[in-house]
Length: 378
Image (cartoon, rainbow, N blue to C red; front, side, top):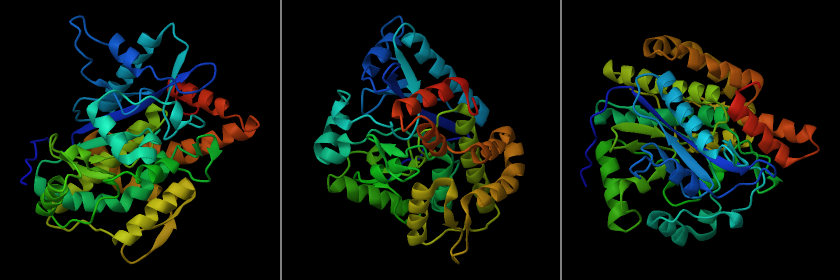
């Protein structure tokens, strides 16, 4: 099955930001995304072009356009967040973003009335109904499809960095799971989700998609829900491994990290160099370590098995990538990674709020709402 790869300008960036709707007084999820989206329709009744629904009616997704800078993409979705806030004015509803809701129950949530979502739930049953998860997706433009698989394989080395920096789902259905990112381990239970298979080239990707389609596992390529995947329609690599982030500073920092990593690898390929990669078993172990321990994870760095604290390697990578960031115009955003490390990841902040409020999870929701409105460190 030959897959066309759209023309895309190199290292352009787009962001998808999933946010949840919560009751201001109780902190519980509210299933009114359909009401929000109706209120956002244009004068002619047309749907909003970039604010969309998701699997559950407790969620709206903000989708940026194609941007040359991370700052532009973040400003785009931040403006959309403002649009959602305006249509919620007068309602006792707030917005939050994190990998999971601290205490909501899956059986209280309403599935969006679309055939593709009903099909997913019908097939996946309990696991599908438990997908009360939120994330960010970052697209980076690739100008040559021959680069897609080598860069995707190279990015797997940095899964633990991205997982640890974004980890924001320590609670699940009212339980402290002991994980920094419970979302990442929940999501990989779905068919075609989780880490990508080890593929040598674009043709192997085409064979994989063909196998999945012939056997009825998927109907189209968008049903491949890998943590990192090619996105042929847009001409991008889409990084989906991150938990939802609750502030624009974190969003910009992580998106800049991703954009710089892709451009750095693309430049290596231009020079005729290989992009280093690790054994799949190291990649899988690293994902688990980051999900479990977050910013305290000791991760495997390379194929030789060297290890170090993930935050130490993030700081090293900031130095390595800073010249790339200057060229791409995202150095201020990249340096925001220091703030995440210094001020604590979202999972750490949530646990701290719960600890200082006698375990109150509604207090955690209130803190998340405040962070989304006021910013990191507020």
